[in-house]
Image (cartoon, rainbow, N blue to C red; front, side, top):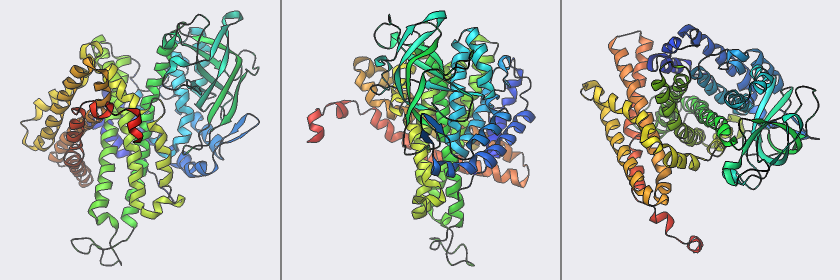
Length: 596
């Protein structure tokens, strides 16, 4: 049977020792977000994730959602778990107090999101989609729409969806065919079909609120003609059923307890969110929040997969250690003594702890971007969040799948059967690399939009703190084993950025061909930056000679940092060669030559 224990000690280390999130109490609206409050929330969140959500993960996967006569039934136990989840206030954690939210910082919600994704990724889809709908309405909805919908979304009585994809178009939303025809009293009639709609229909909430992309009769061609509409399953004023129905649910590789629906809108009543033909801007509010959320899915799956790989490696007996017997009282040594098993475990551990730091750093900057009184600091934090969003989404989901695969590999044949649970993690993790913009699209976003935006201003929001850290610690003898690899890799990243900028101006295929490898380079440096900072803190704590348990914890941090610097960060060298190889090897073969 699979296991999961929330990594609270590591989470608190990142929040308090690395990021010093207590500083957020100085921002307007966050005075109650003290260290004690943060820790209390994390500990209570761990309980519901470990004791309520995690026990439903494997059974939910085996049962899946069922569809009959237009209605979707979630697996056994999900309704009761959702009721406990909402009654505990977890859907209100970081929501605006003006509409009934708790108003806690985004970084705390980010940490909670990690635990939910580890415990039960399918369950997390339902409140996760509602969070995206909430943010889009909060930032772009009229006062009337906000008063009508936000309080119920925050309590979890209602849930939300985002309806973008159609049978003939996904990434290229300019091709959508869903129509919106003006009706009476400011309403519109929405007609069209949307596919792959997570939580489009289910039995957890009283109402489901769809945010739907559609085109008005006078819409310009392409993406500039898209508008966003709110289309409830039941009309809030009368309770009458709206013509927004589920046609079927998908039978999927993973996240089987999350309903993925075909939604049919047939003259469904909807209301405009934001301005006409400006729907894409509003929807990207949801998309960016969703992309960070999907990045947390990658981390969450990796964490629970690595925990199970570690537990199995400590227990499974096979052969003797290469350098002599380690467990003489047993017929064989546990497989954790073998170098290749340690390689897989340390890769998983180094990723999880490094990505956690990166994710929480982004979450804290989201708080700064929204609440800091200094406009320049708000801008800089917003730039950093925008820059790192595609990196967090793509890298963490790529690695989430890789770590899940490593867990299967560590288990050997037992990993391939259902009993041990890790094969589910590999299946669940795979979708995160695809939805909310494939990882290839994230790479194009990074090189095509973020890299050159405002004459490189977004890049500077990351490059400057990295450079400052390197310069501040390069003469520290205890830090050189961490600072020098970071500095070398950072220099390569800067070189790659310049080359892509210069060559991409002449030929966009040059930027496109380099994009995936460039994003990976960026991610490796970003996580390396996190590890260098964590190593600095661990070294300081060791110098302070705290308790034996603390000494063990910080020694582990240093050893894992060394592993990252020496065995994971060097991947950047190969990626740099691929970035600088140019586009010709990708673009020169003709279509016929692919099959030759």
